Structure formats: structure tokens, C-alpha cells
Image (cartoon, rainbow, N blue to C red; front, side, top):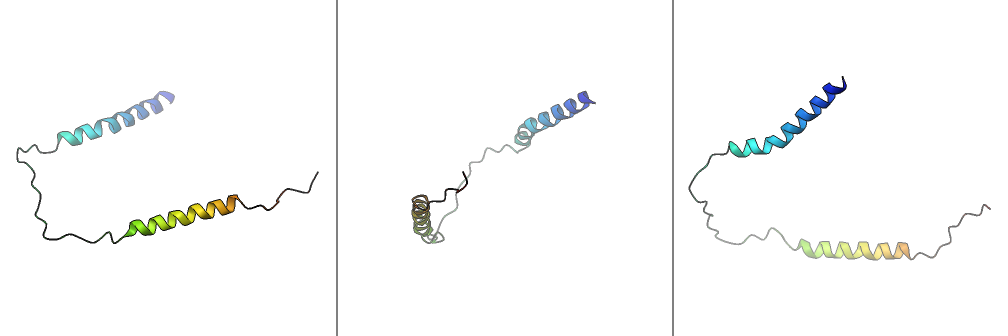
Length: 79
């Protein structure tokens, strides 16, 4: 039974290792170069999310400092 589990584990490992190699081998080989499409105008999809993320990160850092610097004494009263 132990050898059966080891054999199954070896077969699973071999299939995981060989899968990318086999997938790469099945892709068609073409000699045509890829060309990019023309762009008429720029997209404004990003919309300034960098500023929002920076503000949230700064708020998280400030909140962490406030929580860490809290001077309350929470020591137990038991001996």
C-alpha cells in the first residue's frame, strides 16, 4: 500500500512537471511577426486611483501608529 501511494505521488509530480512542456509543444509555430493595432486616442480608465490608494495607505499607517502609541495600562491585576 505504501508503494502504491509513492507511485501515485510520483505520477502526479511527473504530470505536473511535464504539462507545461507538452502545452508549449502543441502551440503552432508561425513565422509571421505580430503587429500592434493603431490607437486613435488615449484611455482615461485609470482615473487617479493612485491618489486614493496613497491616502488610504497614509491613513492606515497613521492609525497603526496611534494604536501602537496608546498609553493605556492593560496589565493584569492577578499576582
